[in-house]
Image (cartoon, rainbow, N blue to C red; front, side, top):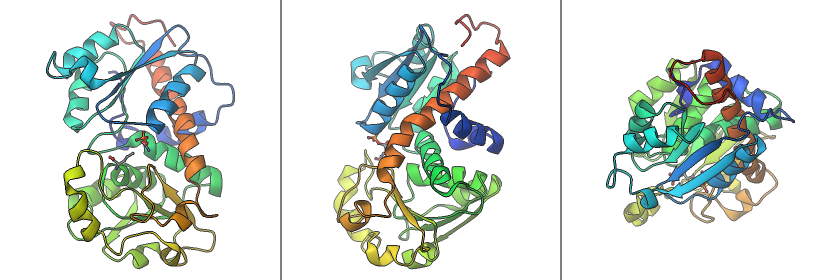
Length: 310
Ligand code: CP
Ligand code: NVA
């Protein structure tokens, strides 16, 4: 079976730690020499595209990014046929999609690893970079308390799973109707985490080591933006809220940030913000992930895998 990364819990806890260790390798083996990775984007991207393209280059490979409308996915041909064809040219496929089920169909048809570069449901590569950033800063993950304030979205879901599986405590603070469902809490608890949810930001942030937020309106939900601005009043991460975090508490945001909405400029641009390290770590984390997925593949010697061993 080809390994894919559609959500963080496709990796066991030890595998997640291995990916983070691989992300730290100073001279990564050139596992992609003479090979490519196809990157398909249905939505805009700055960090994910640049980070993944450069990670592929650092592994000796050639990244090939395309906007989905160029391919006309599911109009000109089904996503499954796209994945099957791309498997003939590339060692791995990455895709950013509106609907998570598109990724599932691609993974089911692909004969090379498929990596989720963000869907409506999850953003696992972001979560890997978030954990790398936290581990680099605090020197450990176990026991770290993370407070996520705002919309329970793709970023929040993957962060919760990654943090829970790494022995961290997760406290969500989201407005009513924008928080995690029982199934989300159960999924994070199933990987071993201490996870809870409240509608009071100050409660979640109290004593936190990491305060995290993301946009109130994700890509694809733009027509809800005005309504959401009202629903999320009181959920801005500002200096007053940050003062409730632990003394050594830091601020994270996957970016892009909207200053004056989910975060105050004084926080995202302030001394406790690690957002630029976090953004750079997207590249190191995805490089570690690719090393892991491609090495797994070589060890398995799959029948029908005619691509050169990494
Ligand atoms: N954080 C993140 O995924 O950024 P982009 O949307 O710019 O890729
Ligand atoms: N939740 C955001 C993350 C962007 C990186 C979105 O989906 O638009």
